[in-house]
Length: 410
Ligand SMILES: Cc1cc2nc3c(=O)[nH]c(=O)nc-3n(C[C@H](O)[C@H](O)[C@H](O)COP(=O)(O)OP(=O)(O)OC[C@H]3O[C@@H](n4cnc5c(N)ncnc54)[C@H](O)[C@@H]3O)c2cc1C
Image (cartoon, rainbow, N blue to C red; front, side, top):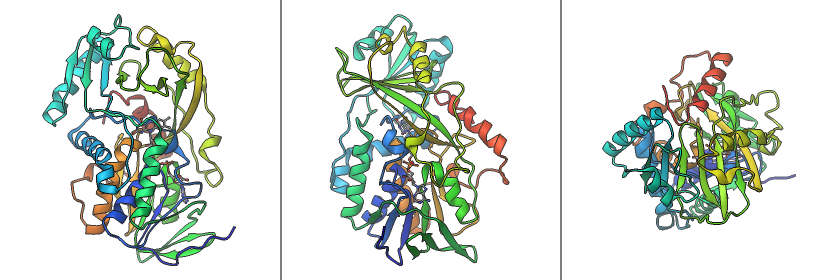
């Protein structure tokens, strides 16, 4: 295959998932000439394509709550600002508690996010089941309704819109071009290497998803991140389900459910998830080779059978999965990479990269252009962890964060 590459770029973005496409589009929109995004596979073909498409305003701290709000705002105004529409469903969402402990967790979260400007309304079990008729009220102790939450029916639509916007503003996106080296001299990025040639640049964004650590290592940097598998399923159409019914998150079972293609989508956070080390096979592995396990979804459906009975034995139209990039404290990795000037990181999704990508991509683009961060993102600093990184501890912490997705901990 022959590929015609530029010999020079102002910024090279490695990876065209939700993160890479977002920062590419926002860099180009800001007027940066010579923005080049490269992907080793087809554009937007890896984890982002497999996301559930859920956006969640209720977050564990003020920073993430405000960023979640900004991300929804960017999606809503995407057509006005970027010239391409992003179809989304303003469904709202329900947080559902079936135990006293989780009822108290909801109370705490509601009190906190209200202070940070999120509209949220406590509901009885009967009111919750009226809003989301696929719920049975019986086991529900309490619920909260968040009218501002949204979902994107097919993740490909956000990714396609981002790509179109990026190209519209002059960015170049090249598929099937792996970055195989990053040239560093005197502590600063000088170029990236590909099988088709070298591209000189002073700014590289590592948005390589599950491969983010391997890419950082090409420049002699290292990141505390561990890929962990996550899966979901979509039923065939079910009577009584309609798109505007809210997303439901059942906290004690760590299960989410939403309307999808006339049926229901569900996924969740099993207690014994699968970390996946891409180091040995990273050069050839692609997400369609990820082993999936439907028993995980059966167990999650079983855990909510009294609350979402329709999931039990429903015919399935799709089962898919990809890799979260988990960090030891459950927070993103955004900003300069440790030890290498000009290398930027946009990763550490911890299961929320699809929905935060509009906001974090925009903020990182502004940061690269201005040289200073537009808001304080030190909580996401890629160099915040002790080094050298111990693999066993990293794996254990990643799994711990995964299993506490709805009960965040530091
Ligand atoms: C089943 C499932 C459901 C999810 N649901 C949600 C949800 O509802 N809401 C939410 O916010 N998040 C969700 N997520 C998480 C979300 O999908 C991720 O956070 C997000 O997609 C991460 O995007 P990314 O750009 O980091 O990774 P990716 O989409 O994997 O993109 C990384 C890209 O980098 C490329 N790349 C890697 N190495 C190189 C190299 N050397 N050279 C060139 N290119 C390279 C890869 O080919 C890939 O295309 C879900 C994830 C899964 C698996």
